[in-house]
Length: 267
Image (cartoon, rainbow, N blue to C red; front, side, top):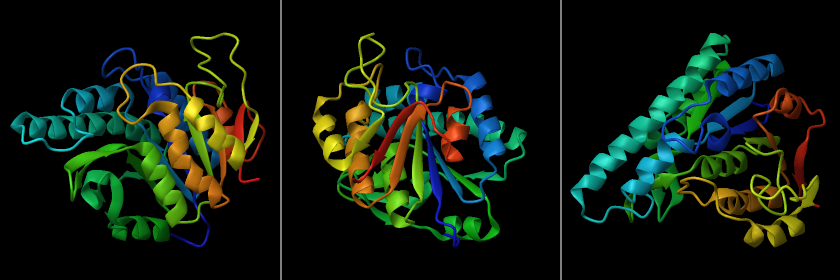
């Protein structure tokens, strides 16, 4: 990357799609988020978005996460899951381009290979060239080829953690459909208490207590997200989790202003 260490923005699939209905985008939210990214005016931003109701249902239907089981229909499932993710990515890209952001999409299936679901190889040629010329890379959770399993799912959360560690990110901003982390699901329990700040020790204690995702999620819901974030926080990278469905939260987080959400630091 260029000299300025990147800021990584994750747009959660639960925020940019309606997970209760298959392949239903929240185009109003996607458009507003593009507006906030434009307003933040960062030349060292990497955007990663999740799959939501586009990627997860198809991946679950064909068992893509668990690898190739010699079932030829899975090959179609792999292709369909990737295609559904490019459709969602296209909607995100539409909004970014409409707001005159020099954003360019990078398909993880073209440059990442995993081994037992962990990144083994990443061809960073395109990313390096984009950084030199100050473009905004946009990646997303995708199906990828796996040297042991044949193929698997590489989640947006895995991508965020991998890129943050590789490029020594300044910080990570994660936009979800809730205002940060809670002690239980705020969508089903009105008594849920928010965590304003967490350190590494508290994050590790919280992780096993977090529930499953609402709707279909092949990547482990919030507990899976936290598992990916632990090594990032251990490396001293600051993480903010905030509500992407509320106006200005992402803009404020990107520009180091206070937000309603959870701040996570090593100590």
